[in-house]
Length: 456
Ligand SMILES: Nc1nc2c(ncn2[C@@H]2O[C@H](COP(=O)(O)OP(=O)(O)OP(=O)(O)O)[C@@H](O)[C@H]2O)c(=O)[nH]1
Image (cartoon, rainbow, N blue to C red):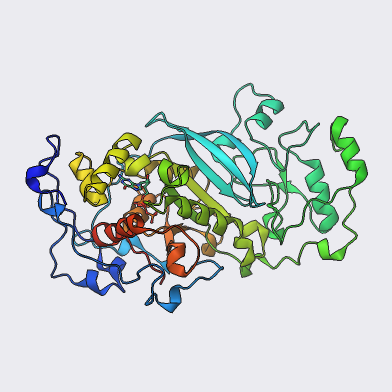
């Protein structure tokens, strides 16, 4: 443990104390509910980490049975930040004004798990980094991507990803995917195409949403969504013949009834707000196999939940979600400082202390870009009349109480209606990242940063 006298010469002399998170977020944690404890003090006193052991020691006897692994979606906890008392609740750092964001390009990414996602690359007017949105599911579209650009050709639109349906050799229109429409008509002859109202996509022919057939993007190949039926003739044609409505390719439904799609339930049975994860870049945890944190595991788990949510929600038009991937490496301090912080951690400091010793705040992140990207994707807004009340807002995958309010934006542009905890896999009796550094990291998040790493 570093003492005050041993502080590096560049250590910040004054850091504001961190207030405790609101009682609402601490329910269930008796140690943390003890309000007689002082708030986390500032430097240098806060170099002394509170002796705190999370009640749920990973993979050890005593782990509550409720946390044992379940393959289905974890429980959501309703939240309403408008009820937070600003006098007693720690207020997250909110941007004053949302940045402007624009989706420059989108592409389909088949993944090693078999699920498909659409990677959206954003530029913005507040930094020069390429932030990302990883979109799972069929109904989520970027307004800025779909907007018409002056002078662009259909090929330009397809190349930047502003197309409906699926790209294939010979396709000439970004706005109409005849083969996909035909496939759906064959599978659901009652479907009629129409233009979608209220969308940034103009002149696009899509399928009515209430038929529960994805209007604008290819189906995610899950067990509820069989692969596009093919015909030997299709494959021959697709090489050379541009597909037009006057030259439709014959499509036959699969002869095996087992490969037919399951019956589609009425939309009202399955409505739920989309799952959203705001993920901050972590090169070490996502790429360099670090077991100092669970960032890589959280990213994988978020993707798994979004790509397999059809297991609990058989209606393909309501599955999926978005991972907004923000380039805020090291809680916003950058990779170089994070690596220095690791060395300070090896010298006995926790993650908060290490940041402070490097003259950085414990958490230097903001979430305005995430709010703006969610808005661009049409998520979380109260005013979206194309959605029923049950679908509005978002379900946020996080343990971080600050994020819930921060992601909503300065003017509550986005509404978080539920929080879904991300409990480490090892705590749920599954194979997951673990180790003494990770235990310390999680202890610090719970004990000093107010994270709520438990399900309801
Ligand atoms: N400075 C610093 N950053 C770290 C460290 N370990 C992970 N990070 C960064 O922390 C960020 C992830 O934030 P976390 O605090 O783990 O979690 P969170 O995003 O606040 O909360 P969740 O939504 O519950 O995951 C990523 O940007 C990581 O690069 C560390 O030891 N020091």
